[in-house]
Structures are given as C-alpha cells and as structure tokens.
Image (cartoon, rainbow, N blue to C red):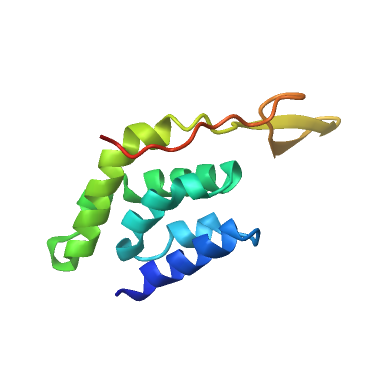
Length: 128
C-alpha cells in the first residue's frame, strides 16, 4: 500500500463522517493518490469535488512534458486516469468565481453561482 493513497482513504472517510476535507491538499499528493481521489469524488461535497477537479486538471494537463529521467509508472498512471476522467471532471457544473463590487473601484472574487441558486452538481460517474 502506498502512503498517499492511505492518507487519501482516511481523509475521505473523515469527510463522509462530517469532518472537513482539504481538496487542495489531497489533489497535490503524489501521483499514487490520483486514481483513489478520482474514484472518491462522488463522496465529497460539491465545493471540495470542484476544487479537486480544478487542481487535478491543471496539475496533470502537462504531465507528459516531464523529462524522461523523472518518468515513473505512478505518474504515467495518474496522467492516463486524469485524461480518461477529463470529460467527467469538466462536466461537473462547478460554480464559477464571480467578482463583486465591495467599494468604489474595488472588487473581490467570490464563489457564487448567482443569487439564490445553490451549486448544482450531479453525482460523479466514472468514465465508461
């Protein structure tokens, strides 16, 4: 068993028990944790699911650009899994950050879908 996959398994179980989940931390674990994170997305709340998807897509989008001397099987597996899941991750219907005016000429980014509309995200289904 690899340590990062174990960390992720424990953290997802804690999230299911109502404790917090740090998607940014989870999505930045080693390549060994990527397959488990992808298969656990439907067990996370919408905000954490969207954050993990955003990081995974940006982190593994250029994974093939690594030098051959840093190649390893886990990185190849993570890259392939994110590519396979890409349509699902992009279809999550995550809330888009919006800018809101907080004073004259001052804006602040927020994470809202719009007034009164809760974020909508269907269950995550693995690519078939």
